[in-house]
Image 1 (cartoon, rainbow, N blue to C red):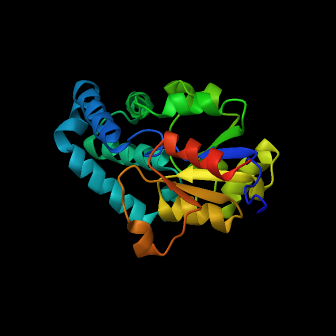
Image 2 (spheres, rainbow, N blue to C red):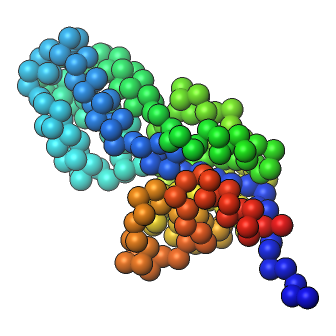
Length: 238
């Protein structure tokens, strides 16, 4: 009889957040519109001098001059607003109120339909963590209770694909990298980054992309949703 090639279940699953658990582009568009409406009411000189697009262009120019902001896009946005307020002659003390407005809208995400049922099905089977380069707030979103650990680049100080951020999440969960699986939508940051850090990596490919062939990246599994992830876990693991 052929011996089983199935391996033990991973001890931990780590998840990327934006575009893995929810779509982020429409949320950012709405958040920027919400922020600009707030500016029109509360900092009218900024709204008169700038548009959403010109504020974005100014942020890109600031990022080009100070690439360290790539680690914390929230800090980049805050710095961009400070500069815009100063140029428009507005009270820069209002920037924190503007950022509060933006972050509230930025965290108004709607998880994909499969996410909550999938997290509930994983409960008790594995430790669950998140590793993100973004500034989503799981507490505000209402999903924090599903995660044992959350590591975010802006507060950690290193970003995916740096192995350190994956290792930090594993250490916080008390598991070795080889006993963890990372799940994410970005082939280079999530899949290649996790694999180079010694984890297995699942590509959450919700769009049926074939980009992995172009990039030469070989995920340990490719799934379209949590159902596919759970099927892979049950099929490949004892």
